Image 1: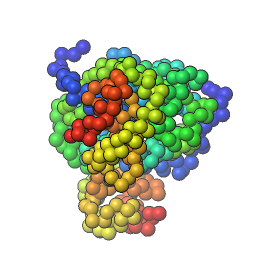
Image 2 (image 1 turned 60 degrees about the horizontal axis):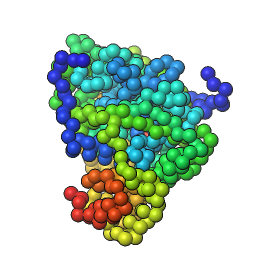
Image 3 (image 1 turned 90 degrees about the horizontal axis):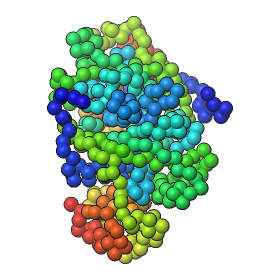
Length: 249
Length: 249
């Protein structure tokens, strides 16, 4: 397509880890869609969650412009990664090209997503069941990672997915799994949040768990911990959790 | 277009003020463009400034995907308004539908934009003159303001522009105007930043001035002060500045 030298770096495991972390620890995103009235791109802010297979999900109102757009054209893009202090372009961000699929309300898929989403966004309880609200799964097709100046990578969409035979079990028993983890390893998550330099005295809770890791909410912060590889059994999960306190850099 | 009751509120002066504040105090934005290869919308992060007429400007590299997209299709959307603590959807944000116009390097327009942009983003000095970098003006066509749940407004693009016969003078003499303002009213901006509860001991500076107001950078924060109406003379500017300390709520 171009004679110019590529500015892309070869995608390595570190880049994949960073991309996953950015997506899985994001509580909101910028969503870009195509406005069906004029063909313009349209950006908006959306609350973000992930399904058990790692696919990002959004909760949107049928009255909003982005939902009308997605119902006519499923092509979309999600931008995640909050800039912190200093130059906004020095902070890592991930843009995901995706295809939106509406989630039918009367399905077990909907129930699974609803439960996980409320774990991530408890305040959404106020409107999650309004008749005009609904979920879309945004299937990742490809992603563009920018890890700071001169650090650009392209990833296939599947690098963001979580594939495990254990996923369905986790989705079904998530609440019990989280409860048991916290009971059996009361210090593990606290140490985890300690090491990430959040205030130890703050209350924390595990918001979601999946085969690739878990997300902890501490005050206003959202922390993601990914296992070194996706788990495929309950024993495997226990074993990873017991290592949490040692595996944090 | 729809039989549904409108969820839009009537746009009032308060909404216009909020929209202007969100745009003029933003240091970065999410940019949505159309990917010419596949027609998908594509979101990315860009550094943002404003021209003397209030038009948002971005500094982009010709090597980046968004620049390639804009060179083939000028339709774009900008999302500004940082979420703070709490629910990301409770924080105001503004999406601007706009048409991108490349700024030719060998023009006085380019010089004006370059000077203002460096005022807003001093670190951009490292790459602003690289041959692959350039500016686009993003002419606002319309804007969608979301001031929190249930507070949606539509604005015509002109509501974001700054029209004043004095603009060219300010653009030309900006540095001298800022210097004199600070000399004559040494306490004004400090009181302004004090009232906005930033740490008084922090260093501050006026980054840009235009006919509608001025922007102050205090540490990592960017504060915008808009006059009650655009100024049209030097005396008018002085008079507004002398009122700054009294007019902050």
